[in-house]
Figure (spheres, rainbow, N blue to C red):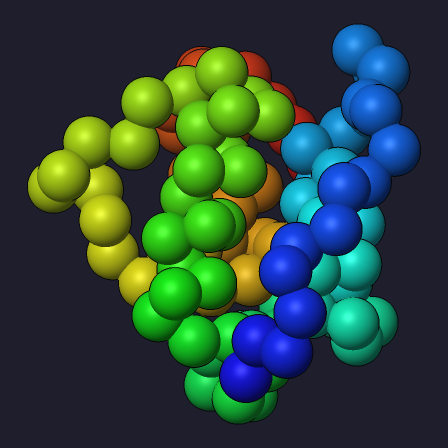
Length: 96
């Protein structure tokens, strides 16, 4: 459940890993600490409106385009899933 509008997170530096930026965004936006493997939708922390905001965050923050055929909840349900998605899109390793 999304209770407030997403808050902004500190500006990333080029060396801030995707995983850290994503965790910070989810935790701040949902008002709840999020572990890397936690499915925020299954846990009831996020809803479909937040899913749209999350896709926009990923596109804007990581300079990737999410194609219509890539709009699968499994790619955006957790820090781990988003990190893997961005790594696939950019061809870069964005591990821990």
